[in-house]
Length: 269
Image 1 (cartoon, rainbow, N blue to C red):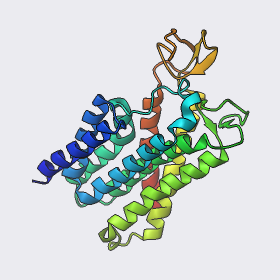
Image 2 (tube, rainbow, N blue to C red):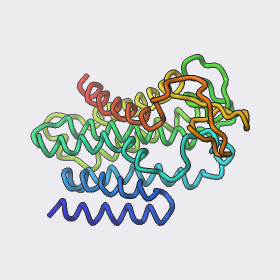
Image 3 (cartoon, rainbow, N blue to C red):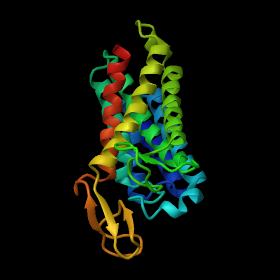
Image 4 (spheres, rainbow, N blue to C red):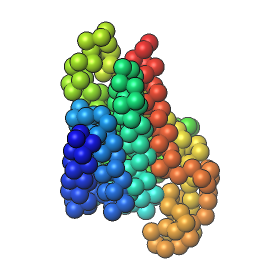
């Protein structure tokens, strides 16, 4: 019955997000599947944390879309999340919900679930709010100034936004599972561990984006971009640096996996 309810609720949420332009058609299908897994195997508390991530990150994308109009050519994809983006940001969380169903006596899946979504939220908030910074971003690997929208570019505003996005998920994890702290886990320790794990996951994302992600160049626009094989103008892009197979979706997946693992480690120590 819980899985059936999960199918209905996840379908409704994905449908509304699709109608509002937050998800593409493939993204809506992927979100419906992910929501079914998380709610059907986890329950209300798991589903609400997932919704907090999706609602907050999507709201920022819509509200600040005009602030990024001049940067859309640099990003790999537009504001609508497709299936790749949905699974890259939420796939690790879905695995943790499945792990909880298989091993219900274990505590770590909940911590890892929150850590994965904290990292995804940290990365999204940093991207969406970092563009508001008045100072130019600096490449995380060398600290040299780079153009706005450059993969691996960080700002103080973006870092603080990343910390805030991560803390929101951590706080949700504490509020929604008071029973989780009856076995010796301390709420402040959980919140601190998940928040730092999310922030660290976001920094891993930036580092991979700067050091290894495939970056391309549009000869017509004379601009760097993540888009391949074609730029927004329709011109074929040429690889400038990085690994051709490592795109933004794979970087985001590593970011969330890092957040999940680090949440377990940081809470433990």
